Length: 294
Image (cartoon, rainbow, N blue to C red; front, side, top):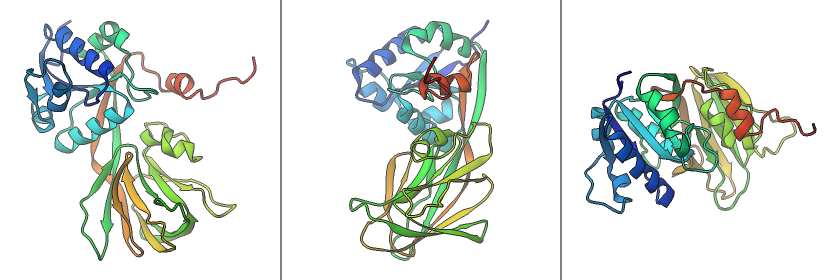
């Protein structure tokens, strides 16, 4: 069968010798099948740093597939960055710890990656969230996240008040260490550790998960992804709450700042091996449904 993808990018921007080794192997192995483009930071990690390299902007506009080598963090960063320029499909080679989003191990490249290049794959579209900060003191750019957007107390770790509205209607107040707003993709990440539900990737929904709320009746809430959420920061005793997206800190928030969240118009396309099974990933990587006793 003929190779479907003729222009393939390799992204592995991580100062990990294992990542560099896999990138080098992929670059050599795939040369006979397609034109290969190494992302510039990825190429810089190679011992032979004279290799030709390309920017993410060039890759998004000229490649028809991106292979991301590393962990879930690398995958999130690459998917988010590329999709904001142009939506090209991405495939993950796991060189991290959990590898929930990166399906293929380095040992499986020939038997599981090559069929994808020939057109035998399972395709998924994952939506993202965007957040705009409305502040009287400072102007911020729009924040975009594939996993989650988090508002959390800063170094002082003190509770602070939040006033939350959904679709223009007041929903509830929350006095807590913070709140996580997650997509289905992010429901198995930070939101899960804070007590949130697992949401199947096919759901068009988002979840709001309070973090260590000062209340006995605080629970996560799942809402339609088409909804808009507004979170106004209340008065606090110097916790300096910050807003982060996919683990990257964006801003320190002040009282009366409003974070407006909505579904992003751009999305991320992921290609999995044909035998990909989401529930198998839950069982093997998160030990979901595992019997405690035989």
